[in-house]
Image (cartoon, rainbow, N blue to C red):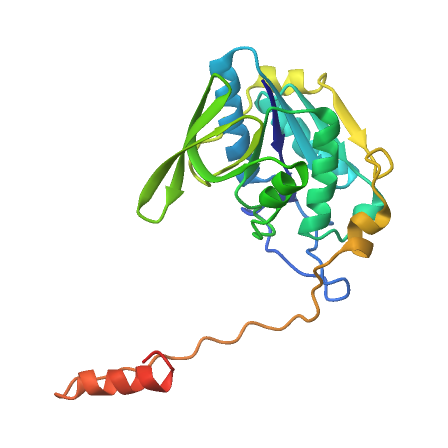
Length: 261
């Protein structure tokens, strides 16, 4: 099987306090520590485990970002991925979820695949929209919130997380799988893997390589825009109701005032 994993470089959520540039209204990524998205590590772990069980599969990681996003790809290669692809172009700056999905889908279509693995959402954006968009653009099924899976005779069987437990779902390949956060514990790269990652191939793609116009992605093609930044409202003190025999009535009145009842 040809397994592809969408990964992303993000500001380290363990050490960086996320800030928004008031001018560009974008997340500040310069001058901070960037890492492979922890959510992407979980998706990669699920992909690597599937490849190891199969014994004949390859795992390719695909990322979109500036040239230094190759560091995140190298981390994924050190964990065990076979090769990588980086979509990098100055015109991609300011891409929204749809622009990102267009670039990823175009690259994935050129590379070829049987299964695509994604995190449910990225740690810096939390939109959760890109996996479904990539699947739609490629014309393939999308299974979301998958916590475990196996592939037999070209059919994937997985457990999909729901509010009260999980569903068992099945789908023939090719397809895209969004892995539930926390469902797999990502492996730590060993020294052997780190050394091997330096020799593994990382292919680079520009918008021109993908037959995409600047209007298809980047700020020029963005359908979503941040219009205004506002400070978070200070949390107000709650109302304490002492029950002197009329507590239930007073609570009901408060709920009516807030439109709940």
